[in-house]
Image 1 (cartoon, helix red, strand yellow):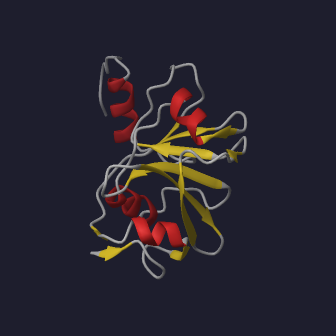
Image 2: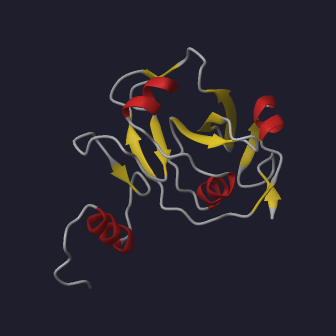
Length: 158
């Protein structure tokens, strides 16, 4: 068990706000993150309203970083609640290691088109573009779960 700080989980830098908010010890907890690529510039309020990403935990973020489930290019954003239950925008960017920043979801900053939002799940319409699992790969087990969760029947599992 460790903290999400420099030297752990391939992290080389964290913002002061991230350090203030998320000092707790983490135990990486398995998650199969879902990803949505932004089709246009959006701020956090728009992302939360339109895409409806579920927040993740620090333990799940540790698992994602430890298992290299994010692409090592571009910006990635997720939403995590602090110990007081306040929701924060957390971004990760790879520059030879992960840079992690925490920001208020109320700040007037737009994420760029093509940035990735990752989450435990999304409640947005099914016609929105979705990449599930690692942006480049998807395990058979994850694919079967996704198909079943979408309401389809699996005729024969391998």
